[in-house]
Length: 188
Image (cartoon, rainbow, N blue to C red):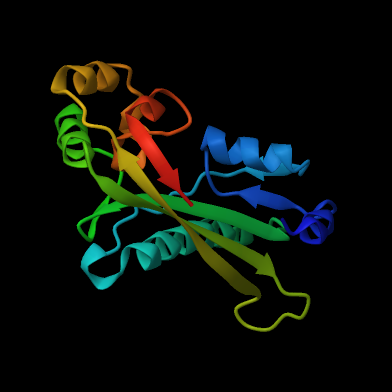
């Protein structure tokens, strides 16, 4: 872990471009002070133009730029905006958050008994000291994890969907809570 970098951030105005409790928890555990300004980026990028890892980074970058731009228009000083996007990929298809319970069931049935990849793209948009156009720089990266799902029966999947947990998670599951019951193995 780049502890020197985290120390460098201690005296900066950090904006988390997300309302995600998990992302909030990660920054809090690092001991960082930050403000939360959820992005309004509509996540409408054309998936066909990107590999899954590139799509996650592109979405994260657009989320961060939307927040950075909005705060700049309000004349708010920002040192760094941190944005992230997580997607699930199976058979080279990108699965984002389900549209409804039926979509969640379709996704979970597709993942059942199979291996898939989870990509999280992270973008740091930070202000430049010199006022050079556009006034910021972007550093981004992606993390990739291979996940193997157990064989799942439809009744269990429906009960899980009724909890509401899958509805705001890429691929319709979250490993940090009940979704972990469907996971057999993780690599990465």
